[in-house]
Length: 151
Image (cartoon, rainbow, N blue to C red; front, side, top):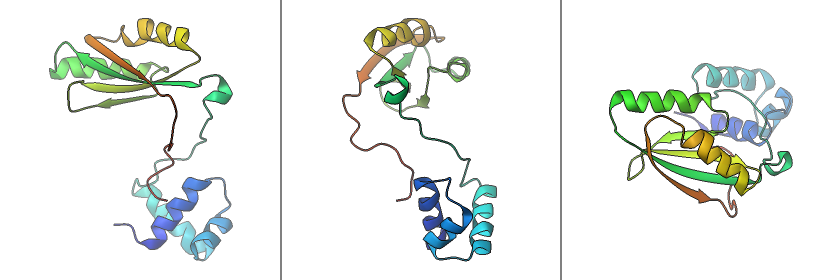
């Protein structure tokens, strides 16, 4: 279970993971050594999985986001495993989630325009193994982007 200091550390790192250790320690009200120890514990426990940069999709020409529901021809273990293995190899697939409900998977892709999405639809999504049905939804506006669990 995370205590208040751990939550503050996570919030600080999620807002800017490039802060110095001293800045993070100051943000949370701990000494640098105590903050360093706690961050190490959070990393070893798997709470902090890694560090990275958030990329502005529009700035790199990928301003259109689509969520795609994919239903498979079967829900057997082999079919699910083959689909997942193939989805993992496609860089166009930004996220892939096994779902409950009518669709088996929810995929997120980013495209430059509708023609680009059509190409991804035909060459990537429909080409994944065992796809029986595809339902796409275009994101019109992101009201609250993902910024992490804490904060």
